[in-house]
Image (spheres, rainbow, N blue to C red):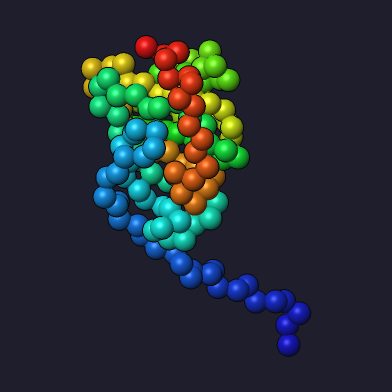
Length: 142
């Protein structure tokens, strides 16, 4: 009899491939295609979607209450305005990664001539969870 405990087999319950869902427009006015979400796999602490912004598109000012956001720009570029009064900005281009901490107001604009596509991950089961709109900040960004 061996003193070694056998290594258990990996737990594969719930592992799956997720096919892209139908496109939808979120409350932030961006177009998304859902991937890993609470609805598709029952996730609680992560979701992964793809957002597409045509030239000239912009989100509405918002923040994600208690939820972090990570973005990988796949194609194109977009300007992100962020801060309590949207007083800061940066441009993210194809290949860049973006981090937006929880509770930080932001608004994204595609000022380029081409589409911007990005993978977006949130620390929530649904990308529309915890969104707080900031209509009072809309006019700050032309």
